[in-house]
Amino acid sequence: MSDPQQKLVIRNIGLLLSGKMEEPILDADCLIAIDGKISAWGREGDLDCEGATTLIDANGTTLAPGLIDSHVHPVIGDYTPRQQQLHWIDSTLHGGVTTLISAGEVHMPGRPKDVVGLKAMAIAAQRWYENFRPSGVKVHAGAPVIEHGMVEQDFKDLADAGVKLLGEVGLGTVKDGKTAKQMVEWARKYGIQSTIHTGGPSIPGSGLIDADMVLETGADVIGHINGGHSALPDDQIICLCESCTKGLEIVHNGNERAALLTLNTARELKQMNRIILGTDGPAGSGVQPLGILRMVAMLSSLGHVPAEVAFCFANGNTARERDLDTGLIEAGMCADFVLMDQAQHSGGKTMLDSVELGNLPGIGMTIIDGVITSERSRNTPPATRLPIIVRRG
Ligand SMILES: [Zn+2]
Image 1 (cartoon, rainbow, N blue to C red):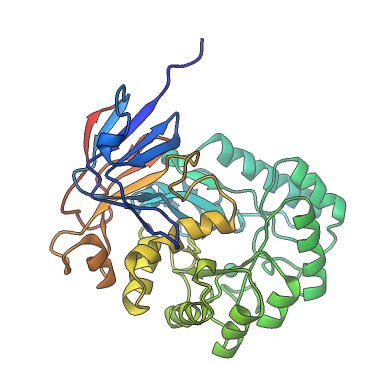
Image 2 (cartoon, rainbow, N blue to C red; image 1 turned 120 degrees about the vertical axis):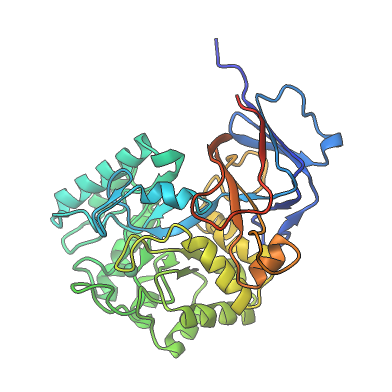
């Protein structure tokens, strides 16, 4: 006997955001997910809403694919030693983020830097977050930092063991483009995605990675192109945007002026689809539970991007860049959502208006794999309207 079908129906949606730059707003007031996967959306009268095991009245609020943080440094469970903080992932969920991508578990005290040790830790980290989702949040971790001495077989071993990401290139001993390029190519050959630290040193012990090294290495994502924290000079940022087609990752822990320069350059190139967002937390700047929302509001308001497009930087673009099964309203995608509304007493007539004025939305609910994971956010300003749980399976 298999489990009975789980059917999630969300009705009375005021605005459905798709995560897709080419069509950011969908004409729909109802969405259905079966067994944790999106199955249909549209007008309620046209859909089969019978037999819902979970029924939510969105109460006119906005539904978007759950936000994705493309750049975090988790260590273990919902604890980070970086600022001695517990429950930072739960707090991030209350900021609308349902998926986290590790750029390396670099804050692990005593992190092994020998080849067998770093491989063992990467595999273990991949396992402990696969086996345990803090507050339901999906954490893609197990991202080894490359070190001198690694050979092709090491990347094959990592891939065979389930490792799918490299930590930021440049945080280990490999700081020359030639070695980094070779290792990134080995990683790619076995299906491991790569990212590179871009800009000045983040903390004592880390180093400068300039545009020449980023381009020579050819990692899949230009990690924190706006610096973490120190950005490269403007001409190098523009050069990175113009000289390759890799992901342009903008982080909260970076230089905000450089973030706007990246946005404006990508817009001139008609390549805003390359923009993805991260926090780079936990870090020296701490943990930013609302970091992704703050980047959306900052880029939308100061960068003059329609809010519905800025939200795509925080879900759909990252999903496509990183080949995820979440972050887009598409049949078969994971039913990972955030429901939000205009914050109480914020300016503007609608949620999108208020974000374009630089305000954060208020979050009313998150859903992961079709299951409600949080209700009214304890971290965002209060939403004007909140979704209502009519039936909970
Ligand atoms: Zn970095």
